[in-house]
Length: 230
Ligand SMILES: Cc1cc2nc3c(=O)[nH]c(=O)nc-3n(C[C@H](O)[C@H](O)[C@H](O)COP(=O)(O)O)c2cc1C
Image (cartoon, rainbow, N blue to C red; front, side, top):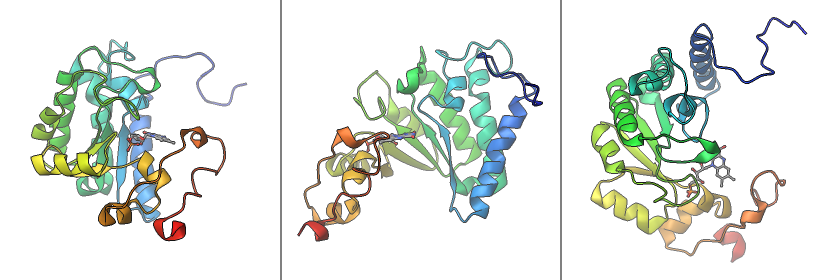
């Protein structure tokens, strides 16, 4: 069927003409989010999504300005971030990264210099935070050797850490300066009042992993708060 779009039935590389269209899509999505009342936008450069597919050499086999060297592979992530920051303000723009996560089958042969470069460039763009998944997303934090403190040192604004944090680990990291802010994923699913529980030093409810990922609402919206349990 000729519907005016390129044939996408076979996997193929984006053409150089298509890339600015992608960048503009991100810019427009950010503008739409702000028009809808969002406080800001996180550019998703992690977990094997498109921008990470470009950044990492396990997936990027291009030989043009978007493939090969670190600068070339990082280009799309940085172009998208620059476009979003220009549209909505760098102080409203964060970026999510997962330097060593094998999520969705993506890898890089030498992630340290790649992410040192990316974070230096994001710092120059003055985006408000980087959100760093330390280790394998939802898995071991020590999946591969990587110096996350090197990213912290290279970034001028807020370093938001994620992956396997509990209150004690977050407090230690806050104290030693390795992160400024923390994102909790799984603990929030099982504890809708996670912040109140942290403040109260209350025990956390355990997550039932069998209810995760597409098996309906059960296990997502029915964990009780402390007050409901009492
Ligand atoms: C049910 C579930 C769904 C998730 N979906 C996504 C997703 O769509 N995109 C993403 O980048 N991360 C996703 N994640 C990963 C989380 O954002 C987070 O990085 C991960 O759970 C590690 O943080 P935690 O140890 O605090 O849970 C998901 C995690 C869970 C448990």
